[in-house]
Image 1 (spheres, helix red, strand yellow):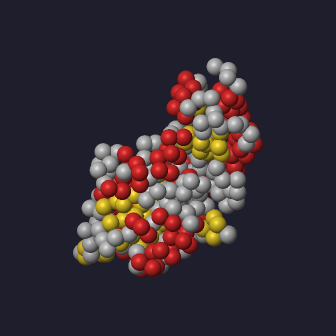
Image 2: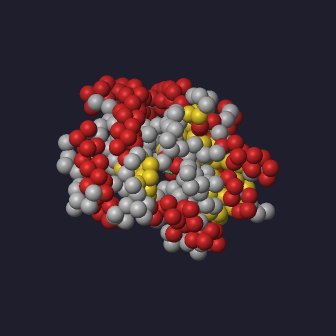
Image 3: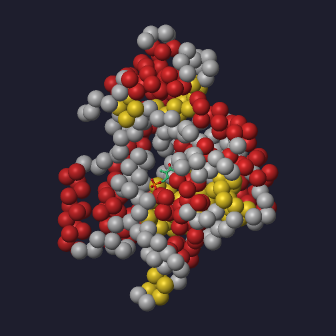
Length: 372
Ligand SMILES: *Cc1c(COP(=O)(O)O)cnc(C)c1O
């Protein structure tokens, strides 16, 4: 085991279990383009996640870019500044204008109460994020979308397997986009998917991820190469067999952190009710009652080789290609700005040991008690 504790360590099924999968790929000589493992993973993931139609992608970012193409989104898109930068980048890659709206202080998701004031005649869609896997207020967002005739594309990169009222959160919106990057709860090394509401939409998305080819001689759209390879798909099929054990361990880590941190003055832990959650991140807020600032605590962790992360700091709206936008002004985003200055994500992954958990908690407890 390495001496440093990262904030996330990829879930990896045992290597010897992967070898027979590779042998099947070598035997079949089918390396990509919707081969057997690709088909199997699409089917098994749809069943596991509780969705009807799913199209695999080479990564989540290309899936986001393609989702916007599939729905022919134009003009302005309302989105959150509190996310990974790929959310807004997918808009720029489509020539769209992001319009940032502030987040809810409890869920860290796009605040539905503030969406309407950001809508203009050029608005055609909303792109919310289920941040840290915490479900957005999907009903309120859909009501606004219906009222203004807007499409909704969820960035569900954090929301693998998340359920609400026994229903997959991924069923909401016109499309829902996932990432299977190595840092995510479920990974295929690199990978992603679009959840589609019907077979016709999946068909169009399948064309788009394969250059727009509908058959050997017919190109129906200026598509891209977004296909997942057989090696990635095979790894996904294998990982899926281990996902429940990984989620159970994550839940256990979450419970230990939660209990240990519930009574530490100046540390705020989000979401008491985590029914149906995937424990993908463990964010805490470092408030002014804590003896160290967020950045001091961050440095303290780093000096102990615990690689905590400031997800999400800086805000997307603070990066050079966004900060000139009217909606990127700090005055427009007070909650996101405040959360971003206090947030810290603790290590959480399936192979995190009890010893590592204790080590992480000690840093916070000692800082609280004034021990250096
Ligand atoms: C990881 C992530 C992405 C990008 O996914 P990739 O598979 O890495 O391209 C997009 N949005 C969010 C919120 C993410 O966390």
